[in-house]
Image (cartoon, rainbow over all chains, first blue to last red; front, side, top):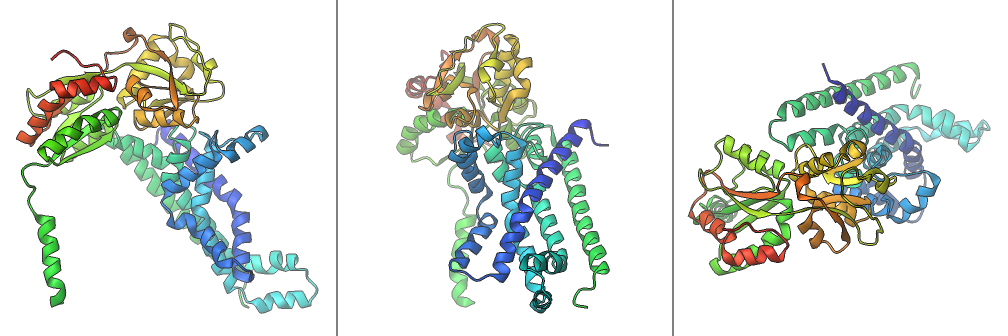
Length: 229
Length: 252
């Protein structure tokens, strides 16, 4: 059975990943919709910017976050009086996780929106629904499987986030030491392989659970709504 | 296919070429970075020797050596990890010597006005304000262990235990203070000297922590070239250079 410390590490990892995904999901949906349905100058550039965290070394993202959102960074200083602090806090780990998972989320959701038949949206419009209403009652429900897949992919990515997190918010037990960081810390000293292994097994279980949940949610939902009736 | 064969064979030959005489690979504590680089420079150019140096926390180095890393010389930042390697029969018997010594200091960003006197009962938590104390991982990395021992001896560990920002090596702690992310940190005197963006707030009393020594020991499988380098690092030319970087050099 996992010890209390191990459960704390898992709980922190889940908290960081959950909030990282929760805060970035609405932004990812907006970005995916814009990429799927809008044409505007500079779209290629916007697309590239969205995908940047996917292709950059995570340590670069972490360093950028540290420079911008650290206690001495311009954004970090601006936000501190508002009570929003990222430096050495779990919130910083969540921010790093959110940014690293963002492109995965946008890609999955964009594909799903692309696949929604535009004629269905058009039909809803001709029946007098506003664009906003069409988006929330037609587009979004039909894109549901993509939403779930995107969110869970990002969640799994967040659970595994290492480079950006350790660079940005350090490795503080109980605050920013997520599963991968705890495992890494154990692997850094001789004689602690057993602890590293235990946490690794927990990590595998968690990832499998996330995948199974994703499958289950997609099946459950696609069974309930007749897509392209 | 034929056209590719020749360059491919050449590449394989290069990759598989046996190491010339002996590849000297030094695994050294992170705090030795500037000093060892400078001490090695004349040795490298005069002997045309190929020497690779990997810097990290002594615990991580010991771990890698135990796992079979091809290091030939180990210079750690405390006696424990050298003992550990000796205990596992990974070292050349009789080759160990204490190369250097160091002091432990409390640092702050250069612009900070922090005033702390390191004496029994010191209130570090108040000096930290809402910030964190940057130290190397106190359960494994030598600089962190010395820091924990010193703070415990001064009766200050309990109050800051939950307020530390642990790092992989002493250089991580130095970087956090240097960038102003942490208001205070504990590093070696030589680290503080190596970084212009930090200043020493106070030096820990020597009695508050075990003596800081850098044991140097040759590793199993090392040859004459490593022995030569070890002798040079403890020799008169190197000693002058070490002192220049602020290290203590024990009498030969």
